[in-house]
Structure formats: structure tokens, C-alpha cells
Image 1 (cartoon, rainbow, N blue to C red):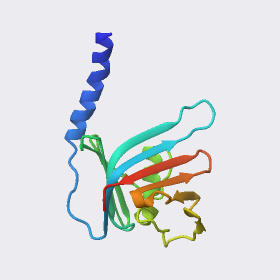
Image 2 (image 1 turned 90 degrees about the vertical axis):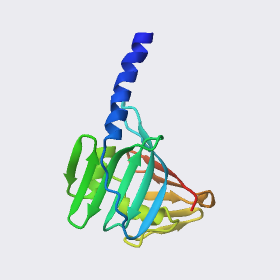
Image 3 (image 1 turned 120 degrees about the vertical axis):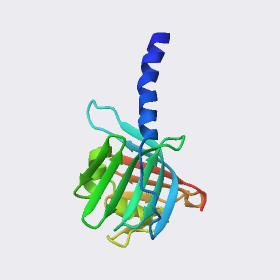
Amino acid sequence: MRRRAFALALPAAALLQACASLRTETQSLAGESLAGRLALRVDTTGEEQARSMVAAFELQGAPETGRLNLATPTGQVMAQARWQPGRVLLVTPQGETPYPSLDALTREVLGESLPVAALFDWLRGRPWPGAGHLAQPDGFRQLGWAVDLSRFADDTIVAVREAAPAVTVRVKLDKR
């Protein structure tokens, strides 16, 4: 039993060491700055198990030029996405990888596309002005997502993409 625990702890320690060595850009960006905890769940069809991820996050800038940091619960940055017109970059302990768009980056990294540009507005409790929306009693629908704002007063937002595979994003913002 002790040997198995050690075998499981070794990769975790290596990952934490790699995370600690990630050099991220920290210069301040004009625009929004939001931080909190993010839980993502992708339900799968068939025999595959659902995929999930929990991370602390910091979203800075704007839909056109911005940065998204994802960190462990201890605060070590695991990955940083940076974007500006014509350039999207993912920085991880393994290096930098360019992507043609934020959509392509989230699809590659998370297995499903997330509307990062819309998140700036959704996390402020409003529809993104870049697309039409349908008002709902406790939120709105936009871009194929149902955004639930029923707990917005508690700094909690839930967005669900109901198309297969279903994706649920739960965000608990740090106090504003």
C-alpha cells in the first residue's frame, strides 16, 4: 500500500514542481479584472466518463486583448492563455503553443469550446453584446448556453451548454 501511495505521489510532486516554474506575464491590462474559482464539467456520451476540472482563475483585459490564468488551489499558475488581435497563445510548464483563436484553444485544452469573449459580460451578470440573447426569469440564453444568475447576489454564476455533450461551468467570484 505504501509503495502505491509513493508511486501516485511522485507524478503529483513533479507536476507541482513544473507548475511552480511556469513564467507568466503579469503586466496589467486595460479592462475588466475578475477572479475566483471555476469548475468545469463536460458530460460525455457513450462509455466515456465525464471530464471535470476545478481551478482558481483570474480573467483580465477584454474580449479583444486579454489574459486568463488557471491556478491550483495553492495558487500556482498551471496555464495562462493570452490573446490579442491575430494572436492567441497558451503558456504551460511545457512551453508556449499558438492557436488560431480562443475557440480553438479552449477546444484543444478543455475538450470543448467555451465562449471566453462572452465570459467577460456573463461574469458581470449581463448578456454579451456580440450576440443576441433571450431573457429568462433567472438569467438569459445566449450562444447555445443557459446562463443562470439566480445566485448572482452571492457571486455565483452557472452556465450550461445543453447541446451534446453538455458542458457546465460554475463560477464563484471573489468578492467584488
